[in-house]
Length: 203
Image 1 (cartoon, rainbow, N blue to C red):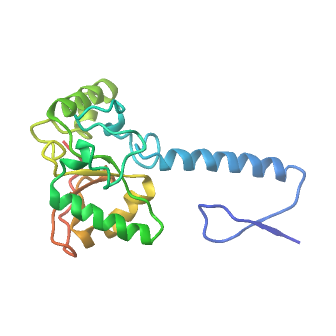
Image 2: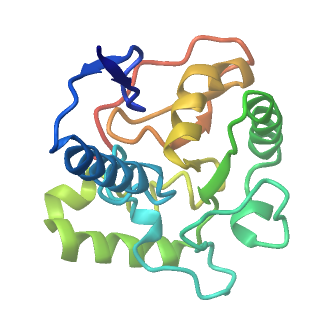
Image 3: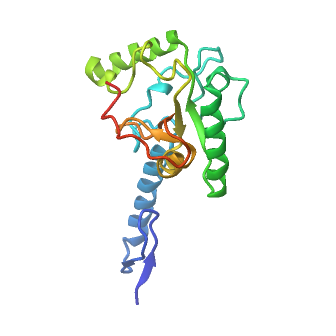
């Protein structure tokens, strides 16, 4: 007789033979899967499916430069500059997408929105220290080129929300911009339009 263990990452049951080591193996597997899931769904994407989010390098200090808690905020947190200073049309598109995602059981959070030029430079400096000049420029724009500084870009988390936005964002005019940043979205087309080809990275 066989029993079946259902793993979160598989769509069909996996046969398993009974053995003395089965409980130990199962416990170890559950621990590993839980660790992977925890890393993958972190809103800052650190170490998971999403590369380390530069928007979370500095953490939040409650000032008005656009930095946010690692857990992110929602479109309703307009008391924060990171949300309030987004382009109004972008914010409305994210608000509509957030409502639609909620109907699918997905919670959309904003992990980064508007940033001051000084904060953008700080993120760039920290990224250079962490990844080197070349690696940093693939993830962080200079203040004069950043769409975050102009309020025209928003980072979405956690992972499931970012991938939901990848599939459904164009229905609201929201497009992924960089191939290496599934969390970064800008309002680039009319709702239902076709998003432009992805750029390889921010460089």
